[in-house]
Length: 309
Image: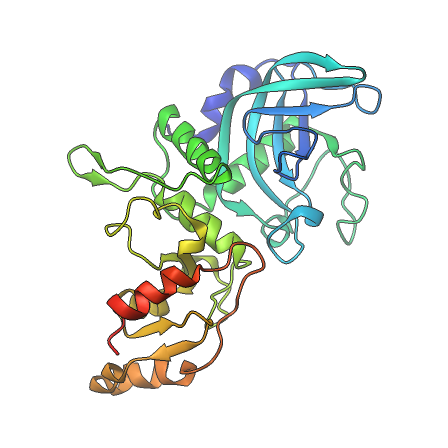
């Protein structure tokens, strides 16, 4: 797929389509919304959405894992609309795509919206009912911006796009088992989604160095992918680390205690330059995320099996 918007080519060529931003908290209690599956709303409060319309997903700041910042995390099409009760309808979603990584406010700070002037801040920019009407240009621009930020291989098929969405749904259901997938080579299906969720939990900042540049961050496994299939997608089996700290953690030059303190191996002394970089973190406490912190049993395993103590 040369352009992600090719997925919506038919809809974008239809002048009758509408375009929206849907806010969702991503929980079962949020009016029974299921991310990438269905979205519910009250027609008496907002009655502009039609079958076939396209939308962007937004997680509002009140429900965000990322330091209270809202973010855009996907897009899709309302395939059909069902009446499910008094003043309540459900939109069935098709052609869902996930933004990996998500778009934070600073990622769209310079984006030129056409449906409305943003002003100096984001206050009162989005509709208070959680459904905001935007333009075709806004929809296309945000989707393109999201996929321009991808650091892994760009999905080439609809099946690959759908696989990402399905993996996100597995995480939401707390299904963390992933079997091996074989083609010409073994594939780690779901690992990019796992890494993205871990980085979100840490507010896109390294738990040790505090580095915030996205391209320098990795969602690191505590128990490696190859060791256990049942922990592969568990966000509590992950820590957001910068590139150097990820490698040091993976190779056992550092570990995190079950009480979240950093231990540095004496093996670093074999390389004075490496020692200068890592020794300053010895016995410091890592940043512990509010959402899905590392499980102590996983950290104990890393201390006992990987760490060069």
